[in-house]
Length: 206
Length: 275
Image 1 (cartoon, each protein chain N blue to C red):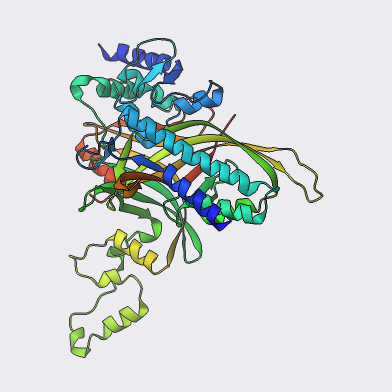
Image 2: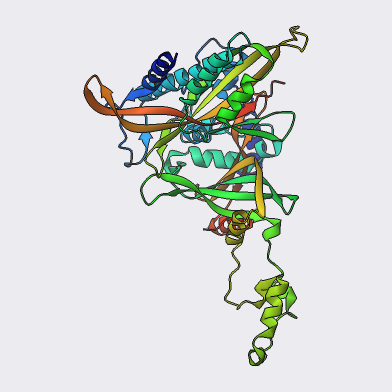
């Protein structure tokens, strides 16, 4: 089981790598001003990463899965993030109070929700046209993604409740770091894209 | 054009322009169009996208087939639900000024003349207090940029007591008895600034950091965020986030006013911004 888990972790890390050679970071020596092609590549990469996160969340929520499988998927989801201290902030239309949690705690809270299953449908992605260099040498961008979330609730008596449905838009910090990675036996520079903090806004629909 | 016709033409033009719907061409839709998808496409989702559209780097196409232009791009960035703003001749004058190529108006992240004002809820001695934090981007010595705290506006940091407490002072011969009055003053521990020299400059940001470091003041949460732009010569404007079921949503201009450098400085001072 451990080997299988490590292989999946490796695949997730490899999927997050974008070839560095074609990227131009010459804009005033500071920022990545992405070309349309580069922006598309990052957009697809960001979308895949966010979709991966959605896939893991579905597994984490689904009551049909064992606790072990759910916890493995919490680990896989965490591997998508830049650090363990990344947070998710959720604002609701009903209250000015915001809900802020570390990602891991959030995923564990999601794991324990009384949902039978969830459906997550993404309906758009917009990536910031620039990645700004931070003092730590990493590049920071933002992905805006909207989704509809439908969950089947399970009552205490085991009966299915009416579906819970909401529409939210997320701004997700993207952190791009240049690292040395292996291409076969050759070492080369790679851009590794990770997720950062997440801000979730419930959308007003009327 | 005389003033009367200007006053009539501007609101009409603006209302007409704002009644058009827009189609963003920047990054396209992933799937077929529905309201949500169309809204997603038109909504100004990030402040960076606001800047891209303002600078005409991302083009917003009017859906009636008319030619895209920077003028129309900037019009689409105004909060159209605020009729006082949309009907103001000043608003149209601003849009015309910014969309005139000769004026070469470009918003830049790197230009330090813009700020974020964060509405914040704090807890101070078990009581909730509201205030504003002002942040601005700053170039790091090692390269790259970071947001830094440039000011704070919090009632508990107001310091207008110094002049009122003239009865509190250390008498000129108190040195002869071992500065007994300073001992009493420091033990009493209130409004100690009244004992300082006239050269002393109260720095509310330093006091703010001290309160936070000592955990006397704790940030509860950040509320609304407003961006203030001082980058356009002769103009000042603010950008707020409007979460609503409309194509005209997201980061939009909420206030536009003429402002020379003196007025801009006054607005900054009023916002507790330290240059």
